[in-house]
Structures are given as structure tokens and as C-alpha cells.
Image (cartoon, rainbow, N blue to C red; front, top):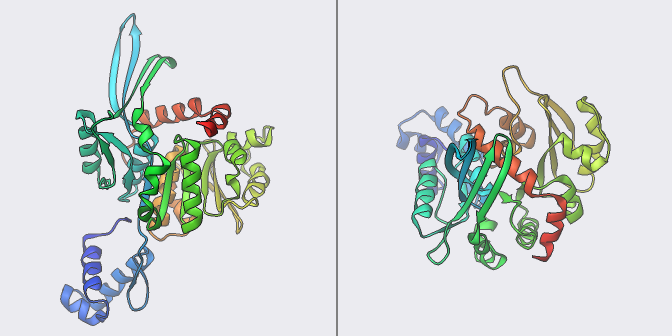
Length: 362
């Protein structure tokens, strides 16, 4: 659900009880001025909770995230067998939900956790963060996911995963959550799910016309799978992915990427957002291609952060241009940069196109 102030929540509750109440009557009940009441109602309309006059309520609300969550243990060897060990929570589903909280959204996370100590810890952590956990799947027969990384400096030496939990996020299970999909305003999908599950979810976003995005896949993969023609998808990528798709370097000037972006969105995609190094973002859709430079003292964000910011903005009732601006404006809040960067390296290292193509037959 999009972020609401305490007063907005109170007014929305009154309106649902008495949808025919006048603004004067509502102002008297809330003990505020009529002009203040009008502003709150206008905000509720902008955020999508009210569709128009007569207080018609929108049955769709908020951002739904579907993806994996696990415990990550990272050991960094500094001398012989000595070093540092760090434990944190990971998985694209978890990272997307966490980034949405930074944008004052209250996402619903559909993931799997075992009924074990690790699962309890992650569940309580998500709850404390303000992430909606009522649809998390839990099973005592399958342990919560775990991943162990052993590094020496920047070199990854060993990676061990225990991810039996991923078998629970299947098409059969997702089909039991259709009402949750139908009522989502924005859907973010973990691209590390198997192709069958992603294909099923894409069929549902087309059926229910849900603004959606998929994290952790390259533009080349989207093209091979035919998803660049999906009019409900907005995608976030780096300028290197555009160059890979074009098969040639395009230089450092943002306008050199305009023509390739136009070709991509003309295939049917709703919107393409390209992170151009440390310079800024390109927003491309059928209406416009706009370049937004990074402001002084800002630093470029990870694609997961930009995707979450856009999703939160769309769920709050902003248009795409304002949603992108909002996604760029998260600087200044606390950034868990180390875990986010590691997640980015994991995505790029694990999701090469040969593996993606092979996943069709999983």
C-alpha cells in the first residue's frame, strides 16, 4: 500500500464507513477545516485510494513483490584462514521490498521461509521494517534458504547455496494467489525465479493490466524471451546493456542512447529507464525520451533502487516522469550499500544468457 499519513488513514476509514458524507460533515468529524479536508481528499485521489467523485474506492493498491529471500553468510579471507564473517539477509525479493521501504512504501512480499529459527528471524525483521508479511509461505518440512560466499578481496573463491525453498515459489503455488495479483497496483518480480514462473506471472500482468517490472535479467534476455513487447512492463537497465544489445560501444554522451532506446520501446514496452554511468538516467517511452542528469552531491543508484523508487511512485499515483524523479531523490537516506552492491554482482555473475535460456527447460 502507498504511504499514507495518520490523518489520511483516519479520513479514508471515515469515507469507507460513510461514502456519501460531505466535506463539511467530514471536517466537523475530524475537527479540522474544510480546506484541510479537501487537501487530504485530493491526496487520497492522487495516491489512488479514491477514484473520483462520490468516493469510489480503488480495489487495487500498493506494490506486490514476488521473489526469493535467504540468509547470506559472507566470509572475507584476509590472512590464511583468518578474516571477517558477515551475516545479513539477501535475495532479490527481500532487497526489492527493503528498497521500497526506503521510499516510504509499504510493500507486500510473497516469498518462502521455513518454519525454523532463520525463518522466524527473517519474518520478524521484515515485520519490523514495515513490509507486509501475511502472504509469506512457510513450511516446516523445507528449511529457509541460505547462501555462503567465501571471498579474498574482490575474488569470489567459493559459493554454496541451499535453496530448496525456491521450489515452493512454483506456478502451482502462484495460481493460488491470483486474487493478490489481481488487486496489486504494481508488481515487481524476482528475475531469478525459473522461466516457467516468470512466464506465468507475465501472463497475469497482461490479463489484469498490472504495471510491472522484472529485476535481475539483462535486456538481451528480455529480447530473447519476447518480453520487450509487453505493454505493462517498465524496465530498468544500465547503459552497458544497451551497448550489448546493439553490439557496439555508444560512447559517453547520453543522446547517443536515444535511438536504441526508441527502438526498444517501439517493440511495445511501456517504459525503459537507462542508468548512464554516473551521469544520470534516460527515460524512454512512446511519448518521450528525456535525460535526467544526476544533481550535485548525488550518486548513481543501483537498478534495484531505481526500480523500487519508480514502483513506489506509480503506486502513490505519480506519472512515470515524476516516479523516475522520485527514484533519483532517495539520496540522503541510510544506504545499505555493501549488501546492495554484492547483490548486484551476484545478479550479473549468475544470470548470463546461456543460463537464462537453459532455465526454460527446468
